[in-house]
Amino acid sequence: MPHLISLYSAVGTVALASIASLTFATNSASAQAAYGSYVGVGLTFGITEDDGGDGQQFGGVVAVRYKLLELPVSLRTQAFIGAGTAVVPTISYDFPINWQTDAYLGVGVAFGSGDTPSPVGNKTSFAVQPGVDYVLPNSNTVVFGNAIFAFDAYRDGGGTAISVQGGVGLRF
Image 1 (cartoon, one colour):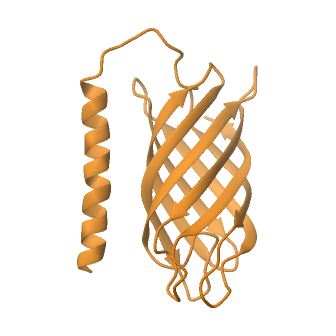
Image 2 (cartoon, one colour; image 1 turned 60 degrees about the horizontal axis):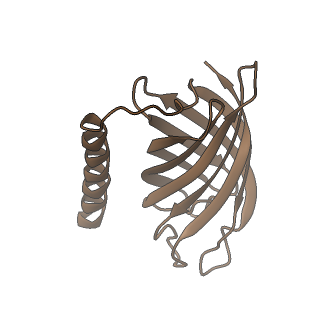
């Protein structure tokens, strides 16, 4: 339990530091982050496995992005459905590449459940999520892709769970 409390404290500190740095940042002429929140579905692949050989698998993912207006910050959540299930909420800093494309880096927590690992493990762990969102021109369709690195994510040992996922979404 003390490990979990220190994990939440670290995530909170990173989030507060990010928000504080955004508050005091100066405005410059640059591309705006791709506008809009979305809900999407796609496929995921768990690259790593635990010491028992579980975890490496294909599965489904449901992704939600809520874009905070005026800030290059988004709240994101991904739900993983594979041999096991997991939910990974993150807060991300969005780096605009052009009017349709964002690269981002998120931090959060992977909540794994059950005895069988999901693509991101089967225990609660700190997670880092790099990714890209691309809005198809003249549409409300988003193509997304990302990876999740969930540290110390397996109950049966094995260390870091790594998954890659991609899919399509609808902006709202």
